[in-house]
View (tube, rainbow, N blue to C red):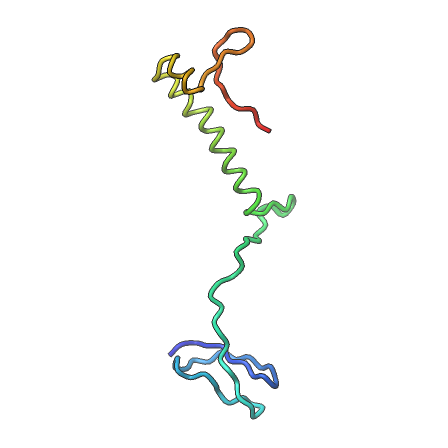
Length: 114
């Protein structure tokens, strides 16, 4: 037996009942019949959970940008210096990890944040 929700069309009474899956209607207390409602299989696709109650940051919008910024920071602060140490200067220039600044010094070619 499964748990289903039944609703009466006349008195709008809703009840949860354990019945067989073949039962579509049940008698209501008002004398009419209650019909089985379709199950709600999914919810909303948007996450409406508030991450920070003071700034009203929502997971969907702000969390994706925060994770991307963290990945970019990790790449340019940790991964690129390791790659520069293990590869030659010519390879680092070709891969655009390094560039020459206005003074002619080799610096990490970190993109500017917009």
